[in-house]
Image 1 (cartoon, rainbow, N blue to C red):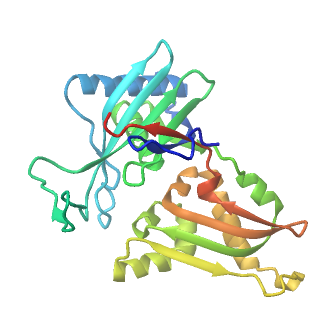
Image 2: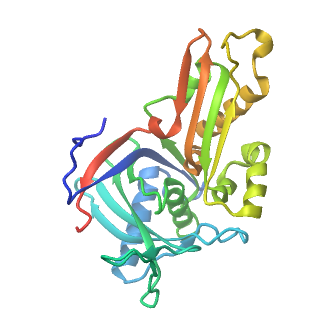
Image 3: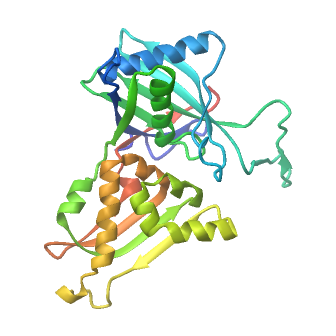
Amino acid sequence: MPIIDTAVPKNLTPVKFNFFELKYTPFKNSPQQTTKDILHDVITFLTQSQLAGSGILIDRHEDRKKDIARPLFVTQVSTDWKEKRIKVSMALLRKGRIPKLKPAETWTLVPLEKGRGEIAEETHLFIDFNTPTIIMCVEFNHNGPRMSDIEYYFRIVANDKLRLAKATEITMYMDISVDKALAEFKNILNMKVKVQPQKLSQLDTAIQGQYFTSISNLSQQVNPNFVKLEMLFESADKDYESSQINKKGNTMFKRILDAFKANPVNMDVFENFVVKYETEDGKEDTFNLMKGKKEITVLIDPAV
């Protein structure tokens, strides 16, 4: 449940945070074999780089020649090893279409001056070392680095820079269970999806190629910022016979849920993902990916 009142003071902004568990897979010959030890070395490395006045810039799309660059770097690391808590701020350099500025008391937009540097979007996260596993509380910033970016950055630092770990695994904490939906699901009724087409390449190959290739092809022709897709499967009387079960639609939903379960970073691709379905006992239920994420809301002073 949110921890704020409905009346928000004008000088404060509600910011949502989601929860994730991070796990490293070490190399066999790595000097560090636990996730906590590997992440400790990663944080120490980033802190030392920051103190030296340098930054570790990593482009998530470096190997994707057709995609817009996505350069990431850590802007702040605050460690409290005694309390076993860490605050990290990560920035994404804004590429592609640049936003404009609305001067006060006018209705005319003007270009942002880039002479002093590049536009950056910042995401804040908190890491808790007090629990048996590594828990991350990550700000949801639509324009800034997402959890998939953060996972990639920490993986590359541990792999390429320190040679400690070969892979990372992220688990998202959710109020609704993917396992529950898979267990009780009988027949798909309708499905609504909103996605930025350029993010589809981040999906696992199996579901990307089978279900979203057409959207990718269309986006290359007309360059939309977002695509909304709605599929309706239910009949007017809502009475189902075995012959009315939509096997292909059901298979699609199950495969996407399996992809969410196996690799939660797939969830990060979608701006909206809502499926209404019939359960085995004949009831209707809804899987809403965005509302299903476990979250807290904190009031932040943007000026601080």
